[in-house]
Image (cartoon, rainbow, N blue to C red; front, side, top):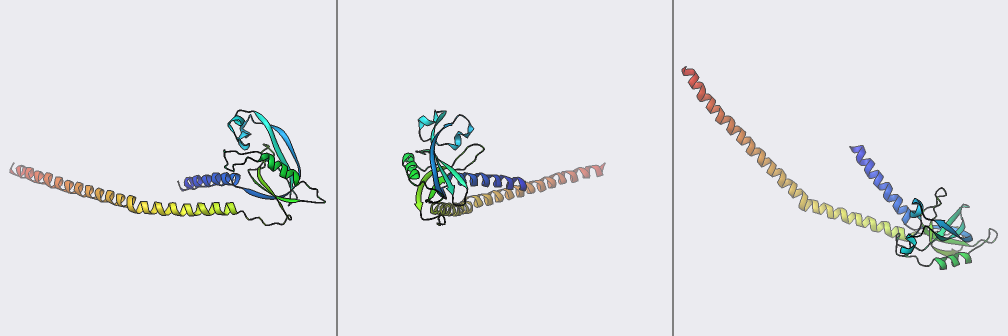
Length: 222
C-alpha cells in the first residue's frame, strides 16, 4: 500500500506540475525574423492547444491564426501563435492580437543587424502535434544577455506556499479541537463498553458457576 500511496501522490504532483508549466508565463529572449497568418484545422483533440476566446470560435472547425517566427538567443528557433485568450482559460485576458502582431513586425531584424526582444508566452511547442506557445506580450531589450526575473511566478509560488502553510495550520487546529477530542471520547466509550462487557462475562461465569456447584451437590446426594 505504501507504494500505491507514493505512486498516487507522485502522479498527482506530476499532473499539477505539468499544468502549471503550461499555464504560467514564460519568457524567451528572441530575434523576430517574420510573421505570417495560416488557416488551422480545429476538428480533432489538439483543439485543446488552441485558444477559444469567444463562443463563436468554439463552433468553428478551422480559422486563421497569426504566427510570429523567431530565433532564440541560444541559436534555436521558436514559432509562437498570436491568439486572443479573451475571458477564457488561461486568464491572461488578452485582446490585443493585432497590436502584438504589429509590435512583432516592427521588431523584425537580421542576423547582421539584430534587434532583441523578450516574448512572454504560455504553452508548449510540439512539432509532432503542431502545438505552439501563445505569445501574450513582446518588448524590446538591449541585447541577448538581458536578465529576466519572473516576478509573477515568484509571487505566485510564494502565495501558494503561504496558502499551504495557512491551510496546514487550520487543519492542525481543527484536528486538535474537533477530531482528536472526538477520537478520545470514542476511545473512552469503547473502553467503557469493553469494561461492561467484561463485567457481564465475569458475572455470567459466576452465575453459571454457582448453578454448576448447586447441581454438583445434587449429584453428590445421588
